[in-house]
Length: 196
Figure (cartoon, rainbow, N blue to C red):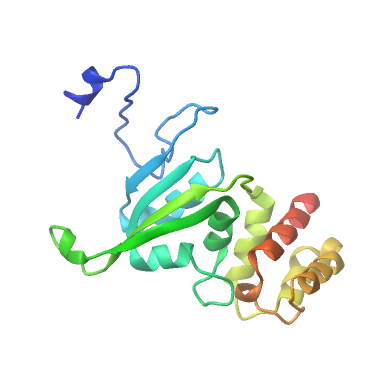
C-alpha cells in the first residue's frame, strides 16, 4: 500500500501502521469529517468502539464484526444482550440495515459467523461524559441488582431525581439495568455528569 496508494494520493491518503486500539482514529486531526470502514479483529472490537464513541464521532461506520458483538451493539432494551456498549453506541448512531456474513467468505474459515454493521451518526448524537459512562458501566456490571439500589449507591445526591426519571420512562426502582430504555439511560447519564 505504501508503495502504490501513498504516492498516488499524497494529500488525501494517510497510512498509519500500528495498533488500532492505541490509534482508533489513525491519527486524524480533530475537526476533520471522517468515516470508518473496518474489518475489526474480534478481540479488540469493543475496546476500539468504546474509544471511538468517546468522540469526536465519524459520520458513519461500516464494521465487519463477530455476529455476537454486532448483536450486543444493536441490542434493544429488555434483552439480555442490551448493555453499556449498546447505550453508548445507540446514543450516537442509528443502526442501518446490515447483513450476516457467512464464515465461508473468509480464508481461513473462522469458527464464528460475522455481521456487517452499518452505523449512521444521529442528527444530534450524544457522547456521554466519562462520569456518565462509568455509571452506566457499573450498573450493567451488576445486572441482577435493581436500579433503585444501584442509583442510590452510585449517585446518592440525585437518587430521587433518577427514580423519577425511571417512572417517566415506564420503569420502577425494581427495574433491572437491561430493561431501562435508551432515553431513560441518557437522562440518568446527564444526572451523573452533573454530579461529577
